[in-house]
Image (cartoon, rainbow, N blue to C red; front, side, top):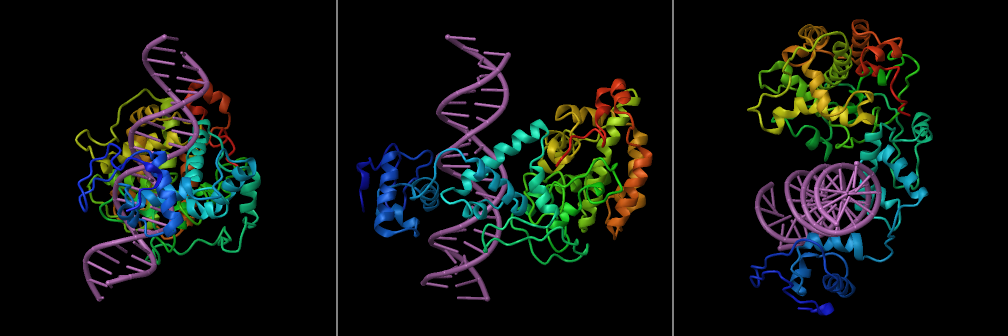
Length: 406
DNA sequence: AAATCGTTCAACCGCCATTCC
DNA sequence: GGGAATGGCGGTTGAACGATT
């Protein structure tokens, strides 16, 4: 056993002896750091579980590896990101999604954890402020299919790619986003041949020029075709839509065999938000309980009510940036009229039998385009935001009034 | 000065893939 | 082939800290 660094072996940690060591958690001490560094100097990286055996450290191998990788290994750059680094991160994220390790590989001396923290902080801030996550030039890069390629080992996603055919068996299973996005489901839905379809499933107007009005043009990859789903950013797009299906059907049967259901429900949710804002401005409040019942305490069932809160709280993501976030969203939802819901459900039914929660029969995205037009007629975008704003501030949210995403 | 709020960052957790036996 | 061990990755948490009220 190596006693590098002179640190106290126990250091407040119970030690049950060989095989019964209670591993220490929490912040690392300088002595532990020194011990770990000495271990790596002697034995090299890897075999991290041996650290515990060969030194007095009561840390699990994972913890050692993490400490080394994030803090002790040489050539680490500490301190704030430079402007160039920040820009590179943004650019990489626009292409890779939440692939922190791969992003870190492009930023010498930076760790995936740092990048992840940076991005999540930035994400929070930008969402709160309703700002676009990606600067226009970076999204232009996307538009012109000139993805940033800092090195040869970074795969180039020449998107937008034609969306893969829907309703095909998955050919690969996304590693993370799948789990997160559909963690609410006992039955995992199938989806088309790549996670890209989750984003294809975002509101139709994001992918066409037909709606909303031409003044609004989304190029934000977050909404658009993207190789990977940043799962903590797109629950709105995927999982929330799914949850809505189950709630609309109200049969507890998560029979979601179609990625297109997700598409449709996502669009539906977007439209419902628009509808709720409009409806709320015209009608006296009339409560309608779309939220999970109180006895539904698990996350699955709360997903529906949470979906609106989430959307409101992630303004830059969901595009309805003018909507009131969080609590007010659920209030707005409660004020939605039955007939509005009925219209939405009828619309959904016509489009893909969404209202009954069964498998969607929509087979093409064109249907969604058409239906969005129908819905546009149902809830026309206000032509004069000021007028509506005077009626009710909430109505200030319309497609025209949205802050530019990109 | 105290309380509250927001941000940052280090660390942990769970899952998955790979390797080893 | 199968299970265990190991490493890697992404998501999440919570403490520390500073700013604001």
